[in-house]
Length: 427
Image (cartoon, rainbow, N blue to C red; front, side):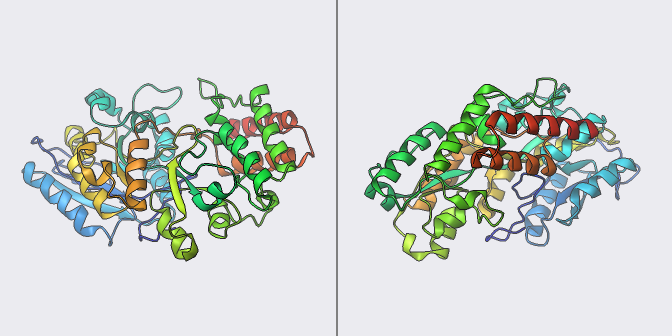
């Protein structure tokens, strides 16, 4: 899909994103050969694969490539930009035919199966990534059961909490101190309902990530089994069931035609939603009466993290140059430039020196951008990459049954774990 700013939000499963790329490097690399899809056999041409970035970002990509080539005489880069649809299948086909590009844009869940097959280079062997990139973005490319890091973090995004300040202040709450955790959300939702029976603070049923937010393990350390059917997780679902029964959550959240918390927010049906740093523009465009009535805070508990990265083919015939290219694409200068073009955030620690990201201009949009950028320092991926859409659908079905009271929370979780582990075995 496309954002209102025009950039593709790729949906690898849970997704988010965008893509960007570029190239260039500071140290000269000797020639060799490159990977597939057009790389030369003598290694003088590297292939760089991006995901649905042209033609919108062709000039940016060409600029990054030209600067890389200038710094590395004798090395050329061939850009391969793949269409948005079917990208995962395209990558798997390239892998099956031993034709992976030298450097390629892979979100972590796309990188996982390739890393498991030994097709991606462990880039942690080429330097300390913790000195360059935010911690959560590096961790995103560490996979259970594998040693190493299988991608250079590229651009990032996260969610924020958005509140209707007029509702909060009129219904016994303080819009300057909104809930910071799920537990505070339960507490303040009850206060709001008691003061304003026609208002709802809560706006969605829980997902698997909400269990993670409470510090409850979802996956075992070996990455072989789901283990979230605990008494702690059941207690959390019980809280949501009680909130639903008390009318703190709109009944529509369990319906198949649920519009999503953002839509309910713009329709003034709820007073809280989640959304990205640019969500305010969408809110007031869809409902101009919200202008001046929306405040933003960090996401509840721990900020979610969505990551795009650059991986390197282990079979590249010019591995030093491929590593250099991936580092160049993801360096602070190139990432900052891309972050000025589109609504994404750089993954580099050095980017905090750029006030465009780290300082607000006093507008709601500026506050949100600075808050989101600051959130990235502690953001993390909340859902294991092994969770497929089919697993999520089954989990959501069981949660809906539990919240309606059709089954107990423990029964719902036990069923979900059993089903998801069976699906996991078939992967």
